[in-house]
Length: 214
Length: 219
Image 1 (tube, rainbow over the protein chains, first blue to last red):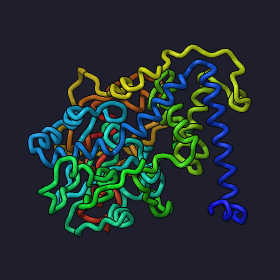
Image 2: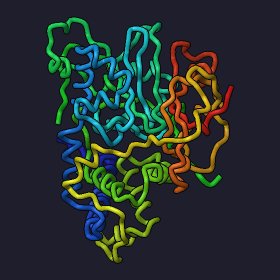
Image 3: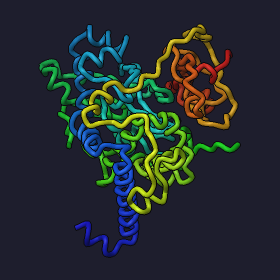
């Protein structure tokens, strides 16, 4: 159905050829770098496999659920997030220096990188497009309530909003509030409720399991 | 000023609404995962550091009209050309035309998991004591440096409060210029939104950032 539209739509045609151009360029680049021996093609596949199957927001959700059910773990997470997150097996690239910030009825935390796309990869995986794009990066530090409203999040006016601009190598993980009515859920069931956006601070946690997709 | 960043977007107007995206949508074209992997694999060779690659990205003349992975690819091509590792002629031809340069390391497939799990921590010991303490009022420098920096424009010349001290870290401003790691104390500094955006700003809105000591003076 998209093809039928392409026949009439110059914008789509234009975008399509621009993407083809990038596709060819990336393919050429890969060929050159492999021929020169700088990159191992199997390592490229391993990198892609890692970030599509093993490292993603399901990791951060496990951290959050553990903090919700285990007060000692929560205390360790707030005191030294890098070590507490490593307890669950997550560490490394773009998460070398972690800080966990906890949402409460009095304070809601939101994370951004206004200068580029700094993001806690070991617990959240790759950042979504909007996190790397100009609208979010420009506006969330100035009008966080307006940006949150675009995500469908409306907070009471008395709730303080803290925006964390990730300008150095410290990476921030938001610990969202545990929703009411979840006392009977297991830790794994709780983790299923925690979305990527809730751990960036642009969503709240509800009582419906998140669709992680693939 | 010869150094112009096009990535310092905090507080800018006119960029429109945020477009949310479902959680499973990691890539939007087949080339994007390849661009990601090529960037990470070349970064692992040690031919440049992360701050140099950020500088290469933020100074791209067409930064504003490229998608994020296009920015990564354009910066990668630039770093490769600047270091004599691969030329535009080779990318245009789609094959190697010149002898390869020596690279410090090549990331093998069997090393990927360990390399990612290790990462590249930036905390370093320093002899000098921290100049500022938690609770202290500080003013950010108003100077605009002629090189890569991690002090966003909207936070220049503003008064805030030190909230935490993170130890000393590799100083991005020096590291990006190839001037070594030059570790400096790193602080989280928090600002009332009214100190950034004027008296009409929401009194229950605060913004913090992570500041190396040279960005700060006593207030």
